[in-house]
Image 1 (cartoon, rainbow, N blue to C red):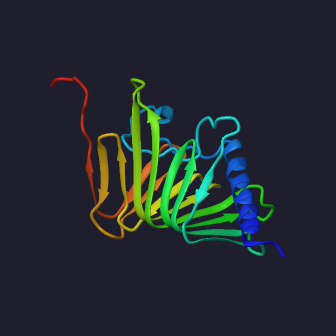
Image 2 (cartoon, rainbow, N blue to C red; image 1 turned 30 degrees about the vertical axis):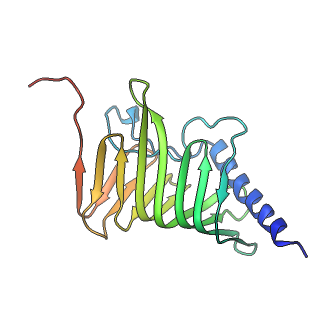
Image 3 (cartoon, rainbow, N blue to C red; image 1 turned 45 degrees about the vertical axis):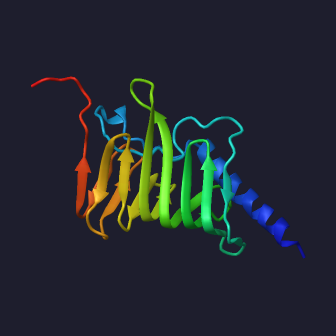
Length: 196
């Protein structure tokens, strides 16, 4: 019988291989950008864009990490931190469901105190931080869609969109479109020099 440390190491290897394989296949870009020809002040580009060669993803958890071989589900609990060259994710619990062949992700769910942080370059080359917060975040690799629920909010640089109702749902798509269903408050700061 394998020791718990060996099982956890094997589990991490499987999950990280799936994350890496998915990203190398192009991942899903959720970057509201020039693809639409316009500017969208909100966005998270999770697993999108150019991934550095030999990029590593590290998942840490303070309570436990488990893997169910029969269902191909990995779960991490207790101050979970996912550090990837393209983003950092914080949550209390992370559930990763692998595809049947374990060569990619089927679904990623983050629960409780979810924070997704990403730094991108703005139009002037400056760093712009994007932060998504929610009680729950679900990433569907097949559609490239991230859904934030339970008091979701998105901050992109100085622009903010915040739910005003617990049941508000914010969806970020790989095509650069975002949608908010339910009450929210949006604050967009015009930093341009245009005069009326």
